[in-house]
Image (cartoon, rainbow, N blue to C red; front, side, top):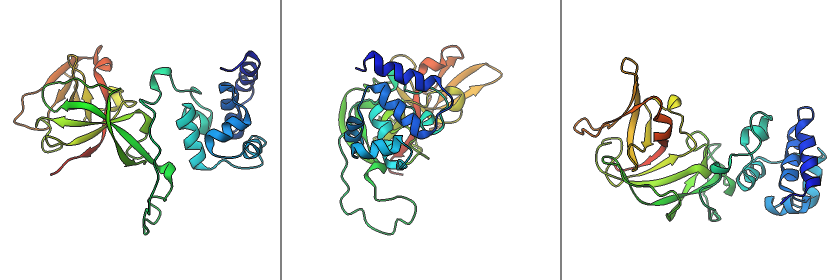
Length: 257
């Protein structure tokens, strides 16, 4: 834990004039009570490199910034812009500690779509048990059956450390999701106002089910309905309770067609 002196230095930094990214990196280190050597060890660079970055004599690389976010739970937006909260909320840290990914012969010809860089890859945890595309089933976020090596790309997986994979059981989301398919659920994307007409995981009565979310203006209720027109698995929620019912957004689907 950081001592009072370190906390005081961090507080002074945060209360001063707007900081640049070099100063924000230093503020993170002081907030955690780390020495430059400790931060260097975490980021895989030398103490001298950390010192040069904080002194604005060297620029941090993108992969080191991403690693800093993963290891410290500092908010990406704050780190990049200084806006918003500095640190993620306690309940928004990583689900579990992920294993290291090592690339073996990543191949050529990817152009600019993806670099052969380990920091661009994240393993997503496959959660124990099935999630229902039909009647709700339990979803245990802390029981990991396996890991799925997945290409990290902010366009479809902006919060890899808050994303879990689950296997779907049932046919209520056919043809979008087949029985036995895999889906990735971003637990950080759970604002219903941003999820209209999106495929989401909802918790209608304790269990979790996959449905498409919509809002009925004239009735003033939220509706979680199946894509399968032959299914009658429909759930409705009052506006005051919907935020507690949305688990997250389905951001990726692996399913045969």
